[in-house]
Amino acid sequence: MATAGLFVALLSPVAFAQRGSGDWMTNGFDAQRSYWVRNDEKISKASMSKPGFGLLWKVKPANMARQLNTLTPPSLLDFYISYRGFRTLGFFGGSDDRVIAYDLHLSRVEWEKSYAAKSNRMAGTVACPGGLTANVTRPTVLAYRPVPTGSGPGRGTPAKSGVGAPYEGAVTIRRDVPRPAPPPPVAAAKPAAPAAPSPFSPRIQWVNALTGDGRLHSLYVSNGEEPAPALPFLPVGANAHGLVVVDRFAYVATQNSCSGVDNGVWALDMDGKSVNKWKASANVAGTAGPAIAPDGTVYVTAGAELAALEAKTLAPKGSYKSAAGEFTSSPVVFEFKGKNLVAATSAQGHLQVVDTADLSKPFAQSAVFATPGYQAGGLASWQDPSGTRWILAPSGKNITAFKLGGEGKLEVAWTSRELVTPMTPVVINGVVFALSSGEFRSDSVKTTVAKSVPAVLYALDSATGKELWNSGATMTSFVHSGGLSAGDSRVYVGTYEGTQYVFSFPFEI
Image (cartoon, rainbow, N blue to C red; front, side, top):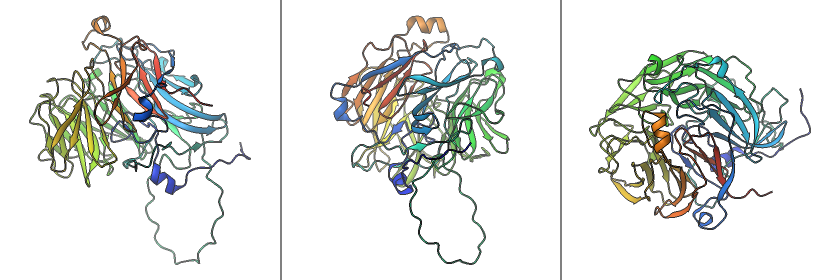
């Protein structure tokens, strides 16, 4: 069906290079699992120090809990233009094998898909809950997102227009500008290998979900329709986390040997439909999933090993062995003074940083800062306008902020107020959002529910850890699978009893 008469302005490639996309694409924001939203129009230290930020809306989607799992943190799509009109969408995973798209401005369901009838219906355990366990993701890129220039707040998110017909997904229309005269013809040359497509380029846009039957679904963001059959990816009943899609390959980690499935990392060629696997010698650590460097190398922590794996094939490239106990978090990859570094926490309470160019020794290691054995889940890393690199780590009772020095020294810059089972924080435009999950961790649902307390969200000054705001008694349950995601001046928290909370400033028309 043809669609005509609608043209929208879209940022040029130069503007994209300066701003990048601010959308939260996957677990941890990007392929590197940085948990860092570079730009925001409204959230800043100044605005969070004034009244206005609070609960925008909450909703309880139709979804059945699987053990302690309910909702996954959403992936986001800001300012999408489809045949239905303007939308800002959030894509949530429900533990009962559901994918739910919400219109985030109107707090209503845009579309919903349920795969529960086709999935594994075993009762499960806390460690192996069954159903949908991994986040819903949008395809993303390998490159680091651009670092803010310090020129002030901004959207940081190019408009994504999609004025396609129903059931055709979305197409992007670029600005109609005069074209220069073509150059004179030149001699034919051997064509260069095509570059990997960017998910931010003009084309149909997708959202991907991995259901409990082990199949990967590719859905149109516009309506949830699935034009092709889901692809077999994992064995039934695997406990998967950290789903990410780059360059038409899907990656995910499996842990706890659920249903006899090997712990490790899996890669699916979405075009060739083949699956590769790296089997870990111990349980995979963390909750964020494998982190991917700009060169495509996949990093995963398992036992006391930080493994580096080839893109797509997952062939081992090398590994770093921790001398401070088994790892307790997923890795985060970041750039530091021309180096690609990887950081993770370990069981003895240390933060370890490794140079990807030399996995034989640590680049930096902190003193003991965390409760020994605390499972941190994931880390956040960001760079401030002065060029200082920060790493934020849950320590068991608070969030500890480290500065990384040029000589490989880690300095504790601040420690947050006391938190109950803190989860990985999110950094937005110089503000740290820290979640006191309230969870009492145990192997029993009954015990956890009885001994947990309601979650509280805090906003902290990223330079000092000073508290700027908190959600108080707004949330009435603890957080297990919900975690944090953020974008377009909103912060999302999903609690155990199935409610999705959205915190922001009042909506302006």
